[in-house]
Image (cartoon, rainbow, N blue to C red):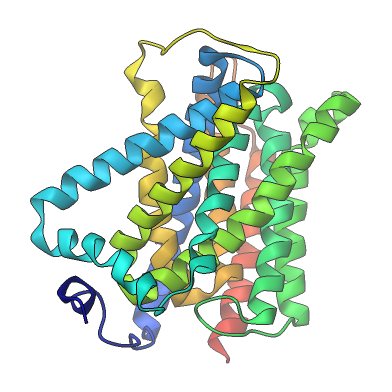
Length: 328
């Protein structure tokens, strides 16, 4: 066997203990906050880049490109990480992982590109669409056993937890929805609905890769495949109407890639600890908290006691799913 491959992982890793499962919950919520912040940053970047579908794809490609360059630069300074990254190809060549398990990165790239729709449909509607897709998909993935933590049958408590998360996002988006939303905007929300469902698949498949090669190498693999996907998509998008304005000068518009790197690395490990549903619900809780903070920080933004209701509902869903998971 190739030396680089041998340094990756020698066998299945032991199941995490109770202390790890409990302490990792705040990390999952934090990961959700990272995702919400990335959506906000990438949405602003897309708006600055120009018009048409190419801007969202370009913003996603830039975000993933920054992630990949950062990971490779750090890997070059750390021999252990460098060996892990070098061993990825050997792991696939030796069929310890199948090529389809790398396809989660394609779905993740689609989600990153869809973040460019945020300025058009609004943060609230974007979030509820992603949440609905993500939560329902996670419930199904755990049921069929695609999660790296093993099969977890659909139960009443898991369905209730999922419903609470979707309801919470509905309440959070109620102000925008009651203000009137054009049908074109609602139809556009079908895109983040689909990419939200794909996000859970990505977390599941990345968790499987991380179980073999570790979270760091799994994140690098995710960024390589994702960047290749968006590069092809960008070339195709040039056939559609739209324009590009060139690269903005605001450095803050490029930090989305770093936020995405941290999210993918955390999600790759945490999917193995709790399964996709508990991870997904916790991520949703983090998104709710971060979206509220972002909204309050915007000019003319405000936070009200009503904004705490979605947070409470989502965290209740996390607790229900976590307790049901702990009893199995």
